[in-house]
Image (tube, rainbow, N blue to C red; front, side, top):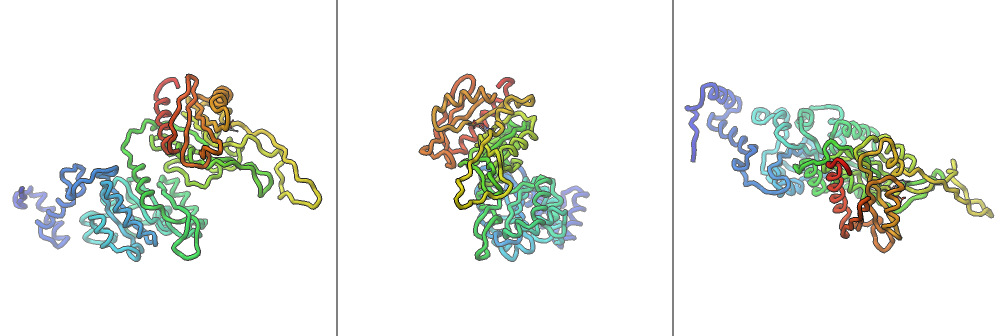
Amino acid sequence: MASITIRNLDDSIKERLRVRAAAHGRSMEEEARIILGDLVEYAPTPVAAKTPIQRGSLSERRILLIIGGGIAAYKCLDLIRRLRERGARVRPVLTKAAEEFVTPLAIGALAADKVFTELFSREDEHDVGHIRLSREADLIVVAPATADLMAKMANGLANDLASAVLMATDKRVLIAPAMNPKMWDHPATRRNRATLAKDGIHFVGPGTGEMAESGESGAGRMAEALEIVTAIETLLDRRPKPLAGKTIVMTSGPTHEPIDPVRYIANRSSGKQGHAIAAALARLGATVRLVSGPVAIPDPESVSVVHVESAREMRDAVEQFLPADAAVMVAAVADWRTANEAGEKIKKKPGETAPALQMVENPDILAGIGHSKLRPRLVVGFAAETQDLLNNARVKLDKKGADWIVANDVSHETGIMGGDRNAVRIVTRTGVEEWPNMSKDEVAERLAARIAAALQTVEV
Ligand code: C5P
């Protein structure tokens, strides 16, 4: 085994080592061992790693995990395990409040690394320091991101190790918020959420459901460990990004057409397929502008979403996003809306016949884009049909000025509308491609890859 003799080091290195060792109250040999240990731990080359290299989707990726003080902190134990299974190196930072929920001992044992807690620790600042902590990572993850931590981040406070690291970093930051639904919905948290999103902070969750406090439920549950892992994998994805630099405008979900202030006409679209496509395009590097009708599913990761209700609002939002390289219109837009939306709730009066709804046609957003002066190079529409699928799709291709129509049979017995699977055919000017029945995520991946290929060629 090789050995290093301090005596043989350059004088200037020896002097710096002596000062550092003295500051830490260690011998020069001990100090050299710690420096080397650190180097080996974080060296990019796998051969030098102290722990055996784990192969996996996050192999050798360095994650600085900031654990905030909330009941959801316990989920970080599982999160660390899942990340390490995938080959990631996890360096934990605990806030003071987090130590009330999980112990540094448990976190350190699972992470197989030192746990950092103090901003003003003489030892830590000399060994690593908050600046190095914030830079020696590929990604910073905050889980749980409490209302307090989010407020600090949004306002640039840096009075403890976690917030100082977040201020000092030049790396991307992913937060997994967790708090009581009232706190999540508080105007202050809403302001902070908007600020953080504008600052480029990535979010995963929160989900909705039962809270730790009995009888409380709503939005605020921290995302599950595996959801956080997926968000991390997406952000650290090293796959090629064929859609980098391309902008794609999308619609997804149903529309709600008002009858009066409390009633509306809707359809059964869940938004699952459109949202999955938006996420798949974003994973390939596209800047995706998604205009979503009212849906009960979360916004897709790394996609900017505008929420609307009616077809007219959807059209206005889509127009704001032109020009774009491609348009993918998946929304089940209502063909008609009521001609005479009542300003007040329509009342039932004894003896009167039921009110008749007068309908007028809605703007066709896809056709508008397909025939627009700002027409994107690639325009993709969907056709949900219950009969004569292919003929209807071919007619739509022309009528709407689309390049492709993704046709699917939404007859009740197919279970496609609202379900998790889909069987589609891609109708283009040159023919029809029939895809096997697969999950909506698989359809999304495949369609995104096809869009990427089309945008790389000169003619689509
Ligand atoms: O005519 P139909 O509703 O079947 O057309 C479906 C396609 O047209 C989908 O891509 C849908 O998003 C789009 N569409 C639209 N605006 C409408 C109606 C449909 O963009 N008003």
